[in-house]
Amino acid sequence: MLATAILAYVWLGKLSYEFSQINDEVSENIFLPEGFSLALGLMTGVRAWPVVILGQLYLGHDQHLPWTLNLLTSLANTVVMVMGVSCLRLAHFRISIERSLDYLLLILVEAIILQPISRILGSFILWLHGNHPHPAWHDFIDFTNFWMLEQATCQVSITTLLLAYYGRWRRGLHIQYLVELTALSALAGWSGWFLMHAEGHWLSLLHIISTAYLGTLLMASRLGLAGAMTGNIILLIFTQYAMHNNDSPFVQLGDARAQLEFINLLVVGVMLSSGFFSTLLRERDDQAQLLHAMAHQDVLTRLYNRRHFYQYGEHLLAQLRRHTHAEASMIAMDLDHFKNINDRYGHAVGDQVLQAFSEILHQELREIDLAARLGGEEFAIIIDGAGAPEQVALRLQQALQHKIALFPGLPEFTFSAGTTRVLAHDRSIDDTFKRADDSLYRAKRAGRNQIICAEAISSPEFNL
Image (cartoon, rainbow, N blue to C red):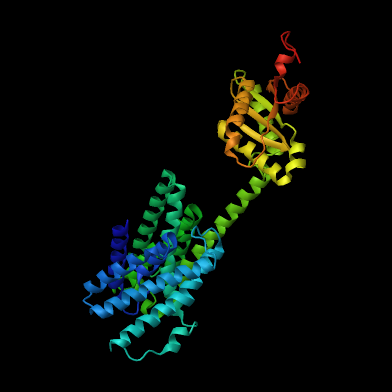
């Protein structure tokens, strides 16, 4: 892992040195490993410092720097990484970048703190070695200089790209996502090549930048932050290529070199706004998921609530009426003497009992079964498919007896249950629940910690 990170750092450094030979171009003197090391530091902590030290020492040796200058440069880059990680952690930055605020924090730390410090340290080291005139320190704290935001934008894109893919990898990179990413990246690359080589007076700089902007927004809307940052890197590559290729129509259109600051401003705007766009979309999706969960789930137990239970039950009942061979059943349950638990141990312990019981339901039931907390200590289960519901209830009772010891500090408790079949001729799922609830009431009257099946009540063998 360490060797791989060092190789990546070195490769990005060599790429940066290639770019730095281009004077007066977009993103001149951008040091790509700075964004890489910041992302690595945010993911692994300041333990990433060996990567920066060793990677920079190799780059300096490759550039034939004096060993003292090489060592000081490596230490300076390490200081910048550590300061960036520390500042962002103090600001409660989330590496998942799930809020637009996280993206804004990354931009501010890069532009206002890390870029000035990096330039100050670099100029000071060169001055010590007599390779640079006495630094004009006021130039480094002049936040009106556009270069701070321009160069920070590239670093932010590299850092955000790595963090976004790291988050995607942890959540699972699905085949569909990879296919869309590959297709859209290829489309963006082909579009960039076409625009950079197109002939004719009908093209302008605004045509090219507008197309690039729409492309990055498309990738952001389809693929989230990772897609937006991928589009940004593709845009940066093609812009860099076009700006140092004198034969490119991009340079010839409107005397692009004379409009360098204008082009820089457009590129920075595209790159930053696409990132904000993707984070705002994610915030909207997260809020929608939260509202859905609040509408359908019980907050305390993470089980479904009464509303969702009845909605799902009506849907299932409609399926049974359409498919005569389909089967389903229901279990109504109450925790025994739950009021006594609250009175004796307090409501906090009572909540823990509810959560412990819910955890057992999560573990023991199948994914196709639905468990809900209807209110208080009342629970219900809908079992989709054939099978004896009383056997499911018995298995839950046995699981509760065996697993109660896994919840230290909780009093022992039991539950009573009433079961029934979901019948296609039921007028509504409420009819089904009433049968199960009547059986539950009988189980409680029979001494609690009992399971009674509604269909067995009318059986001659049944005795209350």
